Length: 192
Image (tube, rainbow, N blue to C red; front, top):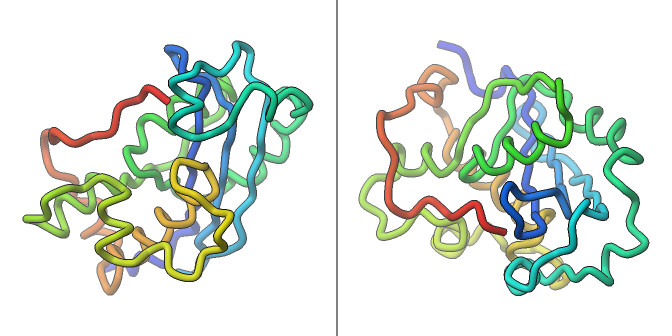
């Protein structure tokens, strides 16, 4: 059995502009190396299309907030460097991975661990597996600066990193990779 800390991970979270498919407005990457959560990196970028009112109500980022932000092309090299890990982690990861893959084109995504799917399998019987419910139940936001808020990339990436470390615990990498078949009803929508 291989201990889960044998891989280096990066936890990602994106906030989008509300269009379909969503374009990137904010991205956070939090490394986990040797089982230790590292310092987050965040980028606010100007999307190709304006942020919708719906998306602004979710994450609070307005078009004025990104008016002077760089286009993604200007931060792409830094993002690629931050994503250089053995595995990617996200909560409802297909949303984040999809946005990142569209922005990076031929980027080869590493192995992905989805904390939504892991929590459903490893913590059976909870009333909800939404990130906000898990953060509250396991006090994953404890000690975070008051400026960090849910539905912002940095906050969501940090609490997802804490959730992954909690779920991984003393488990082996093989146990974490044992994904169940099928999905569930409380996957968060990809409209952000």
